[in-house]
Amino acid sequence: MPATSTSRSASVFKPRAMQHKREAFWFYRFLSIIYDQSTNLGPWTEDMRDAAVEELDLNDPNMVVVDVGGGTGFTTMGVVNHVDAKNVTILDQSPHQLAKAKQKEPLKDCTIIEGDAEDLPFPTDYADRYISCGCIEYWPEPQRGVNEAFRVIKKGGKACIVGPVYPTHWLSQIFADMWMLFPKEEEYIEWFQKAGFVDVKLRRLNPKWYRGVRRHGLIMGCCVTGIKPTTGSSPLVLGPKIEDVKKGVNPILFLWRCFLGFIGVHCYSLIPIYMWIKDQIVPEDRPI
Image 1: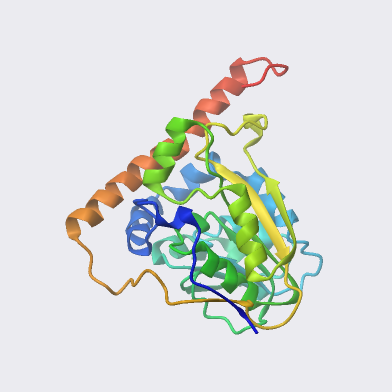
Image 2: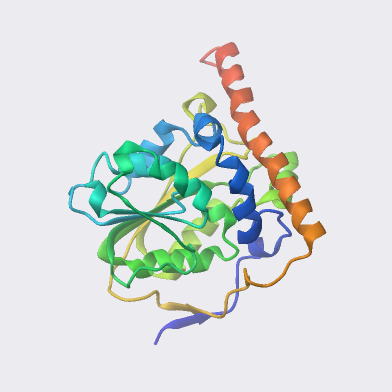
């Protein structure tokens, strides 16, 4: 009999400005213009992406892979280095981000579709691998998204989710709590285990100039993987969704959330620059 859960992690209930699909949609409407020139130079670098893709064990070019929240295709560019692009699907709720992905030559044979990470349009036991990078922080219900990752991959398949980690500095914690979801490492592991994954592993990811330090937070923080041990959907059954994107919103509250989001992304981009400068100045044998 499948397990049933109506409880959710306490982190879901904090009043974050950008942990809503409607706000995230408009946020990326504008961020997509400079996304590849900003985000991928600091918080989410090629080295970090390649480390995450390595965890997927893409050992067969014929593997079917879904990149959920794939955006401009930055992560997918790493995936197609190992598998045939014809077997790869990029999914995102933002048509503006996906328009950027469609312009990239290595991704021209990929399937590119709009969709919801918490309600994927793929059949059960569909893919060999699932990857999602920089997306979970916008999920109203991360457990539901992880359950969907479990459902769509085949028995023996592997899922990989990359996202930020809750900072340890008190000021960064305040900022994170008002901005978007920054899960704790143990929460990632708990979501995977509750969904039914086995052999769950977590690997920390940082830009190389962080020298392993992440107390300032507000960065891509970890990569979590798990294996699907059986066929079918997750044994954890959840209730109705907590967010209805068709429901009207208060325009003032909506604009305020978007404003906070744009402030947040600047901090998200500036901290890596600050840490890079420190890396250039502080001797290598000293922590930063």
